[in-house]
Image (tube, rainbow, N blue to C red):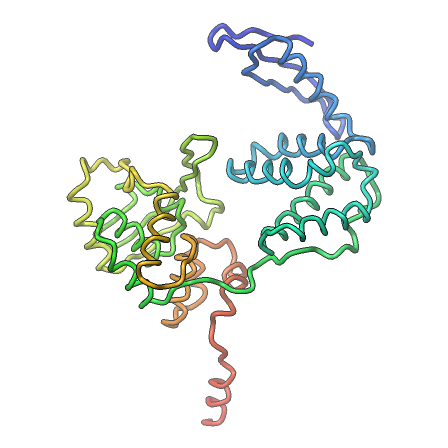
Length: 349
């Protein structure tokens, strides 16, 4: 088990070969260990985690799953999965062999999760992640039976009700905000429907004021105390969004107060998600309107477009949804029932 010392970083690392679950020879390298022993211990644990069979523990499967998907997933996704494993799965099943997991185990876990004060959508997410983890392990351990088969999923994929503001509610909110930075940030969220991460990643060069277009090419995340700029979730997330003239004029005035006009200069250099949430809560209470989440401003934008008769395909493009099914699945209930309109058309033939 060779371990090596890196003079540049003043730390140890290990580099070794192993056989993956398909019997293919692979090479692994891990850096940043303070001691030689730590590097050697990592190699021992890693090789043990690759020897999949029915006795492999669910905790070990979870660690291997994160290791395998890390290069192909966004940092925020890895963080969410890790939190789910550490908080909601490992405390119950870390030392249980995957081949020993039964329907009784799962039902007991589901009942425990249902007894906790969690939203239906979050409960559904936990259930889905556990099923995904088991499928990953079962394939590698060559298990023939799946104890999740036939068991009802818990929670709901989507919330029963969607929170959003009407145009008048938003106007009563924004009228109270005098700070031009916060005013523009909320106007962009409401009138373009972009996500908070997309807003915080905006740079001067992303705005075409001649054409009135907002170029969305990246998203901001704060993970582990670091600012992470990455591409949007999907290919369709890279998109151009048209802006109303009044919003272009607001940006023009705002840019006059920004130091320098370098294309890569952040539009909201000192803004963060916490600032958005704090001010959304503060001014919605002062305006006497229902409190909503920052993401609900995106829902509010869609509700406004639907009210104005904008076609679903246009809304899909504006939001950056990969599929029209995502748009209709999320917002289809907001569309008015057109059956009476159809009858009126037929009666007038």
